[in-house]
Amino acid sequence: MTFKSDIEIAQATEMKPIDEIAASAGLPLDQLEHYGKYKAKISLDALSESTDSKQGKLILMTAITPTSAGEGKTTTTIGLADALSKLGKNTSVALREPSMGPVFGIKGGAAGGGYAQVVPMEDLNLHFTGDFHAIGAANNLLAAMLDNHIQQGNSLNIDPRQITWKRVVDMNDRQLRFVVDGLGGKANGSPREDGFDITVASEVMAIFCLATGLEDLKERFSKIVVAYTYDGKPVTCADLKAEGAMTALLKDAIKPNLVQTLEGTPAFVHGGPFANIAHGCNSILATKLALNKFDYLITEAGFGGDLGAEKFIDIKCRAAGLRPDAVVVVATVRALKMHGGVAKADLKAENLEALAEGMPNLLQHVENMQEIFKLPVVVAINRFPDDSEAELELVREECKKLNVNVALSEVWGKGGEGGLELAEEVIRVVEAGSDRTPHYTYELDTTIEEKVEAIAKRMYRADGVVFTNKARKQIKVLTENGFGNLPVCMAKTQYSFSDDPALIGAPRGFEITVSNLKVSAGAGFIVALTGEVMTMPGLPRVPSAEKIDVDANGKISGLF
Image (tube, rainbow, N blue to C red; front, side):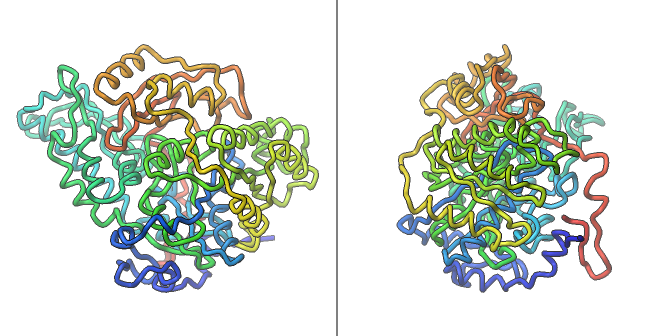
């Protein structure tokens, strides 16, 4: 049996004009800025006119610890939104914009899959509305002004050995991780070690996602710490007088983007992963706009619940005054068997023993949402044809012990129709109501060490945290400079609850090692680096780009 590829499904779909999608969202035409027939940016006036009095239900989509077998979180997010629409609920979906780096690297596309996609798929996966290019330009303007300041006499007394600001490019390019620039004589700048991050790992991306408007964007930019002086004092973007020009570059990008799902559900796609680890969450502006226009909003956070969901609640929700009404944890039987020790090649065979061994990973994610954040949970099993009834029943029985129901999702093959069971369970949970009091992993008035330890012990179930001597010195400096009360953004491998990607399942008896800390003062958090976290990925042996092509008529193939 042959299946259509994602791009073939998307190209065969007759999209509605974006004006129709906007009308269903109650957005008048004069608030749209069109990017062709099927994409539009929404004027910031739409947000200023909205009120929190019509606050829709916020559903957070997260997942188990990812494996190479796949979980289908974005696909499930889109399929659930379409299913809720089928059930008559006024629903939208809010997603992050994909980075072109992974599109041309491993993933080949990031707009959902099968019959649960956001369209126009090709645009979304490539340049879209140019937001990421603008973010990269703003980031690199600051880098240029920093080096120019040093070249022109360095009146701020910047220590070139303590520059923390990197250049960025929206592409996987390991060759740029570590570079030496400014060579060729005095006229070409000051020689120094430098490096590039991928655009989505930049602090500008984080600020973009967390800003509430242009003035807030500019204020956050002004606080960015780009370097330190010879006597250890932080140098900011405001010191370089760059914040105004950076904001000017993003005056259009900051407007949320409106597109649609295959079934015509409005989709707000804006912002992307951030903070050295793929958070995978859309902007506060897009989230709030959608919540004020719709009764139900489905959004996702990147990777497993220990990374994306934790950051979504501890950083984004805290900053924006949001609280999810329910959390959906996505899992596959295949992935759970991998957590139980089964090789990828052997996943098709029924294996109840391995599934039972892998179940603690799912249960820990569920418990974290219930016990730490006090949120109601639904487990969505993204069903594969090889899943046996006995395996599915085992998952149901184990989840029942935590008073959580399991709903099967078949949205990849059936679209919204395949998500009706999940949608009905989400409606049941949401309408039952929950405690609206915000709960977080840690309180802001604790020390940096205490915040990191709270995440490690409560979320990851680590025995403790080891801070290197370098990390302890950095904590002291950060605290002395007034950053001690900021939230913490953990940069950790996505493949394990621990900082060792080989420790799958729900490991115990481990410690988290923090090797480095830095402040993202504009974004409003401290980044704690653990293990080997890559801020500039490389391409694989066979990049997805090798399969992507375009014909004489401009029709793209190979995106999947």
